Image (tube, rainbow, N blue to C red; front, side):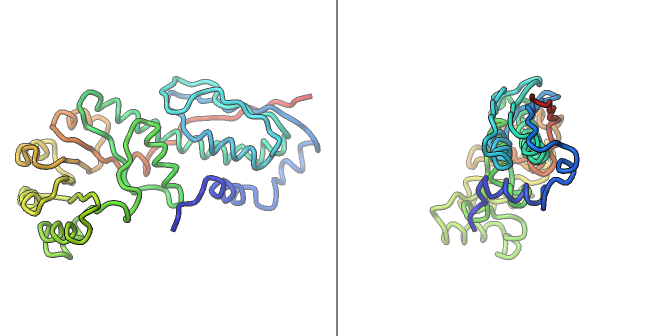
Length: 277
């Protein structure tokens, strides 16, 4: 099934929020009133999601005038982000959906940037996972890229990742790797290992990328020494920002962090609206 397009996502979000109409605006705001709205970033971070925010405003007022006031993908301390001038009803109908998209995606970009900064100079690349909001994966993975991270696989279809349950059903790590290499030699292959013995099995079967799952820093160091350059190594397992600095010195190539997309706090943004004559 193809991923939903941005217009489809925006339409669904507006239907969810506006429904049959904005009853408060209908009751309170004079017909034909016009206004200027400005979205403001209220804390340091990396912006991402301006396309979604702009499309939201255009969907509620096709004649709206938009002006970007800040770049995406760069760390900034705060300030004006986006200005929109149009019908007051259109701006108010778009406000929450636009802020939801922009805040959520900027929060992901910001957390990613913090992780990338922590690992700067170590050579370790920050990866995302499939722990994304259903229907929003493409947008959330784009936000990871905006924060300086790298996307892992898009789904179950574009890369082989043999995990604990796969190995158990196949009869072990080594057998799972051999089967996967025979079945789909053209696809990238990675295998999850939890013990030194599984690492040895994976290497013997020809694995060239190994995911070290839920290991301590000491265990990761031992695994790096054991592999000795015969495979690229990735670590996963609920790392905090404080722990990442130490992990960067171990000798890994990658660290995957599910929290980038499943636990990122939305960036604090607000919309200020003022009437126009």
